[in-house]
Amino acid sequence: MTHFLPLRFALITGLTLLTAGCSKSYSDKDVHWLSIEEAKTAVDTDSSSWFSESRPNAWIDPRDVVFYRVGHIPGAINVQLSSPDAISQLDGYGMLIVYGEGYEAPLADAMIKMLLKEELVEEVKGLKVGFDGWQEAGQPVERGEDQKQSATATSGDRWQRQPVDNDE
Image 1 (tube, helix red, strand yellow):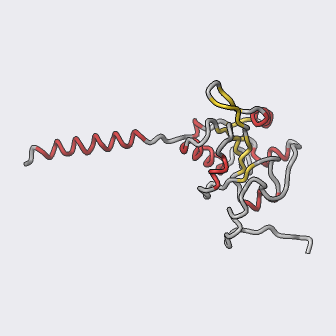
Image 2 (cartoon, rainbow, N blue to C red; image 1 turned 180 degrees about the vertical axis):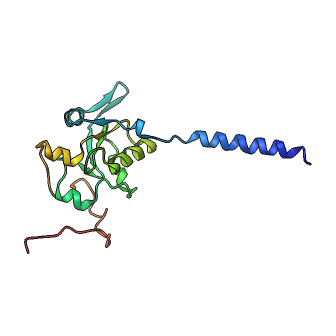
Image 3 (cartoon, rainbow, N blue to C red; image 1 turned 60 degrees about the horizontal axis):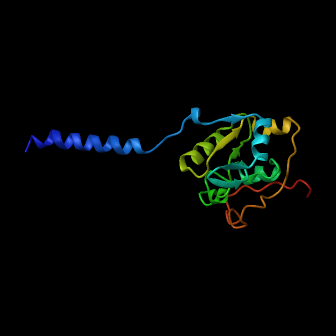
């Protein structure tokens, strides 16, 4: 009976190594950051290949809905990292350019890695300077709700922060 112990150990170790090798992890080396001009050019050019039809590229804003309402890059889609249902909005897009609040924002970095891991899109990149750098460069800004997002996505969240109306 004792001669089976090393064999069992070897089998368990081998299976553990095989299953551990199946999941791919992403690091900072996999995240590619673009300048404002590179990102604008990428978004303005549709993604296509010989084997697929042309698909539009898009800006992705993973920030909280309140920050999105206050200001975002024109045409950006507001997709929170914590909302798995919102990711389905990205179906049909080519390259995604993700941005956060500032320079190489951790939230944008996390969203890029998650999109790469889920293999939902062909290509994901980040806006190096974030929304703050976008504004400082004098680029256009939109305000208000995400028109592409469903009305039910966050309307029932009683814990969500609400914008302050200073006009009252």
